[in-house]
Length: 455
Image: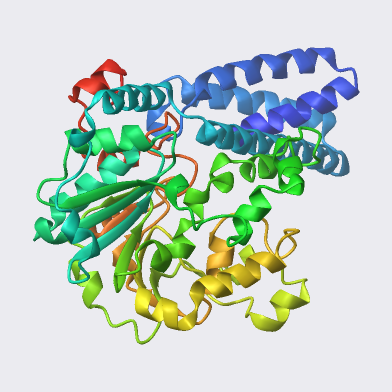
């Protein structure tokens, strides 16, 4: 039926060009009936019982059209024109879809904004002696299992902590180091004071209280404060301002120091030897303690590699037309993922990882080596210093790839909603959302007051 519909459109175009109005009218009628029958039908079983007779009727009118207007060269010309128009329409729709999804990804849902505001009010009503967490002595105990989580999203952070603790065999040995910004500091502390993570330990800090993290020490902070960067981000007349790629790199996360704290782990946690870094768009599905027993063979970063065939290799992220990049890195080197990483902080200090990061950030002040974000400088900084973890530790793509296999998801230690379709947004993929929502306390009074429901 789809093939007949295409041919009918071609013959209708030719009939119109030849002023054959009778044939044109007959074809338009058949085309309209076919479009009504097909609708959103995807398989034969969904077609109405009248479909065979309509196919027969269409066949008759197509034979008539062929007798009157068949010309091979003209048919080819018309079909090529139709293909070109269809491709252009598809390209524009993809561009619009990407733009809208990135716009949605930047927007904080009203319910999450409400939750943060209510929790903040509650926190500052508390007397000072009620604002502290327990077991502070564990925060620097290197024999325990420590996690770094940097987030400005209360609900997302709660899912990370809840899912990790619920699968931990010895939760009392797990310590969560959560850093947020000053806007969400009170809300984040209030949530975990009111909903402590069982026997695990948690601390919530404000990135703005890290006085050592200033523009004289940190190149990326100096760059974010520069006039050139503000021009790039905030001037609407920039060439890429209205494009999908331009919008992507204007995402507020690129302006937040929370996104760059991952390069300062030994400075934030000087007493620790190893730490697991978790993004706030992940869900933990297994006990993660075996990560601390993995021999990284002298490497600094334990991560799951993401390359397959020609995808997600260094040339996807870095500008190899620049000699600084071309001379030092292999364009076919395999990329890896942030989101669930085990870092050896002793080796980090020995290899001066933060120093390497600083040097490359200085070289990229004009953004010619890579655009923005933390993965490109991560690939550079940890080049030849990354140990490849087994794939089952970290399955990615739940925020953009509908083809992620259920088997891979259900056997993974950590699943990652990287991409625009975060599970707390309306644009989330429904088929993957339940893995996240089962760790959200929807019956919590604050969530109900803010109309945060599982829909």
